[in-house]
Image (cartoon, rainbow, N blue to C red; front, side, top):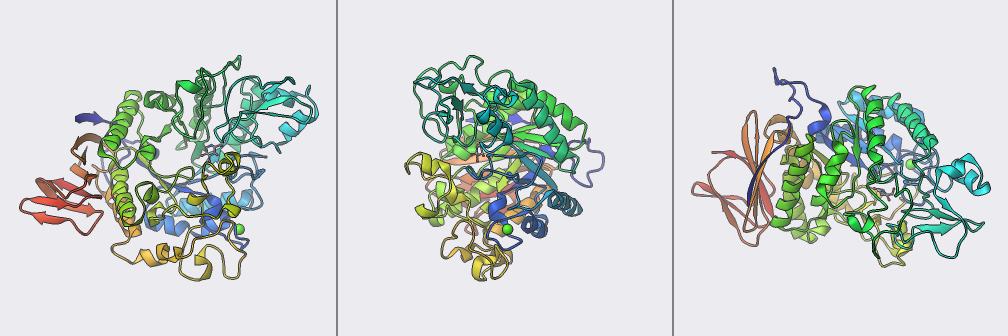
Length: 542
Ligand code: NOJ
Ligand code: CA
């Protein structure tokens, strides 16, 4: 299979004289910070804004363009901050609004941008609106959620993505809708007060200098107006929703919200919106990034792909095609706070690590923007979190049947001192236990080590910045018997990213220069390169 695909032009490289101006986000590398687990500034065992601020030089050194910070708002604590109590404030665990301002300022001085997370599909059950709605069914606030009168059965057959029915009862017997946990009641976007309040929140943070937002559940917000049953029984997971949930997600009305939000961002030049759109159909995902809607929607197909060349080729060509049709760059994702770490998904141990390193070269070669989840640059595997310490509602609501997401959310190892540098010396235990032996992944260990995963990411990011064919321009994807090749072309020539996903060493014919390899075991073989299984290489054309 060989497909020729191109994406629209992306940002000019610094110093690239006559290149047309193009927005920064089209080919940005965005580093996702799970705030609670990144760095603890005040020693309470919880990552915070002061900790992140102190580590910004690391991110500048690494070479990313922007930081997306997972929710920092006051929260009921039921879903890692995605149950927001006040969208225009900061949870005291993380700091205060002045800390966000200082973060933005420090980031700017280092050439980094800050994106926040906005959570419009639902609020916390502790949100003042929901509390009022519970207290008084006739209040205006009650109209901002989905309530149904007391009855024996719930109003429809919808299921929560975290397990169980999507309806729970209020103390007075009414039903209310929550597509996630019961502590996250869904907002009713047919009530204009909801839309107005979120626009105020966007402006509140944009006025403080942030460069935009990652939009949680951007494919949600509106539900079927009559709340009709979904077509059959189903057990949803977090990603890849299709027609089985046709009444719950992806309603046409939601696109008008993104048009209005786009107009708000247009008042703040250089800002952007990137949506979480977990739909199976990539054309439907891409529709959220039409020119007057969100700037980007995250493409999760690679995140869901197993280590298989055909699956990877299908995921990449599918996204390039679909996003190309609407003129948007693809926003590639291989890891995030909702999915097992890449190293473990791809087999764990040395094999999983080798594959994750190879996958990183693919991620950073493809045209478009790339989202790197904090810790992936250290090659962290999924951590084992003892059941007693697990926090994720998915684990608890599924009665333990689903492991949950805690294992990709443990605090980062910064150095080899006791506590691994996550907190200042003498601090409280970290909020999630860090596995024994984790110091082998520490930043301080990897930073000066030529063969480390951190060094690989840093080199890849520097090359991506320097070479116009990497991360922008056009891509042509081909796959042959386990060998995946992405030929990237830009103003400065062509670079091939070749990934050997097969079982035996393969020859890469006619390379020019090897720019970067994910393993030191690549060998010359006549005029070819011998590429071992589970590795990748960037080569210029001969
Ligand atoms: C998607 C977020 O990434 C996830 O962590 C969260 O649980 C759900 N949305 C609900 O907000
Ligand atoms: Ca702290």
